[in-house]
Length: 69
Image (cartoon, rainbow, N blue to C red; front, side, top):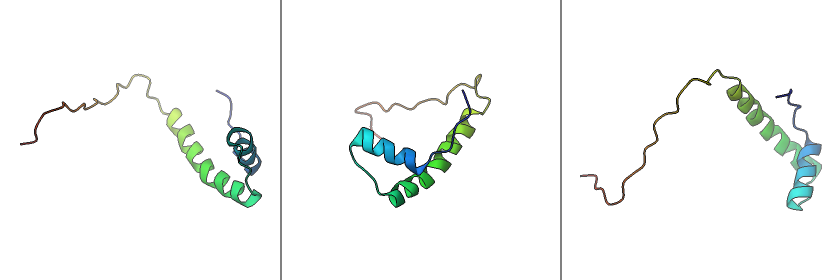
Protein backbone atom coordinates (compact mmCIF):
# COMPACT_ATOMS: atom_id res chain seq x y z
CA UNK A 1 0.00 0.00 0.00
CA UNK A 2 1.40 3.40 -0.96
CA UNK A 3 1.92 6.31 1.35
CA UNK A 4 -1.30 8.10 2.22
CA UNK A 5 -1.62 11.80 1.51
CA UNK A 6 -3.25 13.94 4.21
CA UNK A 7 -6.93 14.64 3.68
CA UNK A 8 -7.63 18.21 2.66
CA UNK A 9 -10.63 20.52 2.80
CA UNK A 10 -10.68 20.42 -0.99
CA UNK A 11 -10.96 16.62 -0.95
CA UNK A 12 -13.79 16.71 1.59
CA UNK A 13 -15.65 19.36 -0.42
CA UNK A 14 -15.21 17.44 -3.67
CA UNK A 15 -16.47 14.17 -2.16
CA UNK A 16 -19.47 15.91 -0.59
CA UNK A 17 -20.30 17.62 -3.87
CA UNK A 18 -19.77 14.61 -6.15
CA UNK A 19 -21.06 11.74 -4.01
CA UNK A 20 -23.70 13.37 -1.84
CA UNK A 21 -24.71 16.27 -4.08
CA UNK A 22 -24.12 18.55 -1.13
CA UNK A 23 -21.68 21.44 -1.56
CA UNK A 24 -19.86 22.53 1.62
CA UNK A 25 -18.59 25.92 2.65
CA UNK A 26 -14.75 26.02 2.83
CA UNK A 27 -14.78 26.48 6.62
CA UNK A 28 -17.01 23.46 7.15
CA UNK A 29 -14.93 21.32 4.78
CA UNK A 30 -11.79 22.35 6.68
CA UNK A 31 -13.43 21.36 9.98
CA UNK A 32 -14.38 17.95 8.59
CA UNK A 33 -10.86 17.44 7.24
CA UNK A 34 -9.38 18.34 10.64
CA UNK A 35 -11.68 15.79 12.30
CA UNK A 36 -11.07 13.02 9.76
CA UNK A 37 -7.28 13.27 9.51
CA UNK A 38 -6.55 11.92 13.04
CA UNK A 39 -9.01 9.05 12.49
CA UNK A 40 -7.29 8.06 9.25
CA UNK A 41 -3.92 8.31 11.02
CA UNK A 42 -5.12 5.90 13.72
CA UNK A 43 -6.40 3.48 11.07
CA UNK A 44 -2.98 3.61 9.42
CA UNK A 45 -1.32 2.75 12.74
CA UNK A 46 -3.68 -0.20 13.24
CA UNK A 47 -2.89 -1.54 9.77
CA UNK A 48 0.82 -1.42 10.60
CA UNK A 49 0.44 -3.73 13.62
CA UNK A 50 1.88 -7.24 13.19
CA UNK A 51 -1.41 -9.11 13.53
CA UNK A 52 -1.17 -11.63 10.70
CA UNK A 53 -0.93 -14.67 13.00
CA UNK A 54 -3.30 -13.45 15.72
CA UNK A 55 -6.66 -15.18 15.90
CA UNK A 56 -9.74 -13.03 16.41
CA UNK A 57 -11.45 -12.88 19.78
CA UNK A 58 -14.41 -15.21 20.24
CA UNK A 59 -17.71 -13.72 19.21
CA UNK A 60 -20.65 -14.05 21.58
CA UNK A 61 -23.92 -14.90 19.89
CA UNK A 62 -26.88 -14.86 22.26
CA UNK A 63 -29.39 -17.70 22.06
CA UNK A 64 -33.02 -16.66 21.68
CA UNK A 65 -35.27 -17.69 24.52
CA UNK A 66 -32.45 -18.12 27.04
CA UNK A 67 -33.12 -16.56 30.43
CA UNK A 68 -30.62 -14.72 32.59
CA UNK A 69 -31.77 -16.36 35.84
